[in-house]
Amino acid sequence: MTKSRTAIFTAIAILLGLLAIELLTRGAFHVFGRYGEWGYTAYDYAYRPYVGFAYQPYKGGRDRYGFTLDSNDDPRRDLTQKDGCEFRVFMLGGSTVLGRFLESKDGTLPARLDQLLNEQSPPGIVYSVINAGKPAYISVQTFLEHAFYIKYSLRPDFVVHFDGSNDSIGYPKYWPKEEFPGVRDNLHRYTENIYTNINNITGFRGSLNALLRNLANYSAFMFALHKSINDPEAWARLVFDKDVLRDDQIGLAEWVEKHVSRYIYNVTLAIRLGDQNTGVAYFFQPTMLVSMERWLTPRERDFLSPEDYVTEFHGYPKRDAKELYYSRVREEFEKLIENNESEFASITDLSRLFDNKSPNEAYFGDYVHYLPPGRAIIAREIANIILPGIQRQIQRDPRFDQCSVGS
Image 1 (cartoon, helix red, strand yellow):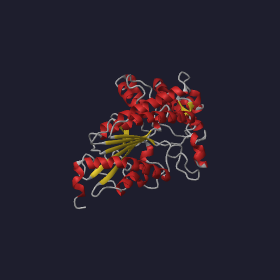
Image 2 (cartoon, helix red, strand yellow):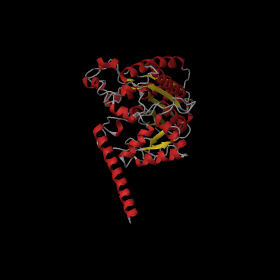
Image 3 (tube, one colour):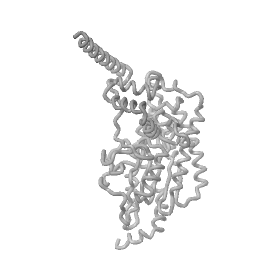
Image 4 (cartoon, one colour):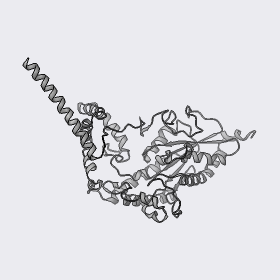
């Protein structure tokens, strides 16, 4: 009987101890900024080969491919099929393509481009612009989606890349640990984690880590334990300023150059996908920079303040890093444009599009995403640039000869 009581008391003591640890951990989260929340954020994403992640099919206004629908799009559309008189355009990029600060579903850049192109369409031809934007996508992901998901499967006539800003981000959750030789840093951190976890899960340690990962959604202590094992610097970032985590072995200029090299490499690959059947246009997107301050509204200038602007770039000030990154990419784009001999691909630097804008008109809703007036200007500029090439492509393609009959 004594042994039974001892076992019961021991079990109760263990349970009370675990409960105390759980409550203490929740209290610590409340004090240090999580406000009673724990666990990992549940995203509306699905794992996808090559690109790492994409939207879940048919959820949140998406089609079977995870592409975002505007009000005229059919949720059940089959992009492996195409009407003979449809000219299909895909627009790739990050959240600036996907759309933020929207007044309606038709306010995105792809939806606006669709409308502008159809206003000037030849008789009988219908343009359709597919919104393939994804949050946080960097250039390697848009290139791979272009090459592996769109080019040979979804019957594109033209592909527009609009990006550049996300490739300047040096926040740890985006920059890879460079665990795979040969790939180096040309990989989204999210994608790298997927394959690292797959490799690890075959062993005991990896399986235990996967168990802790799932328990972390229900227990604050398990979350803290899993986070400490996989990201031990997280607690320093929580308590201290992000800048104290600087990697002094690599200077600001060298980090920027790594980002620039990665971006230009992927731009070069993407434009090589242009051919007589599928045109390609690559655009370096405008963003908010300190050098633009005299053209910004007071609210837009606030977005650049250290209190409101993301400041972490491998431990260096984001403001300085992004300014240098954009300056260097502009130089490299000049070389790409000068050396581009393809008649099926165009390269355009739109990064200065909002220079000299009126300081009384707001084009930015935060330090990177556009308001409707800004998107209207960008869409019009893109339409004007790509339309001559599209028209030449239509004239060369005998498939469209029948479209004007009876118009």
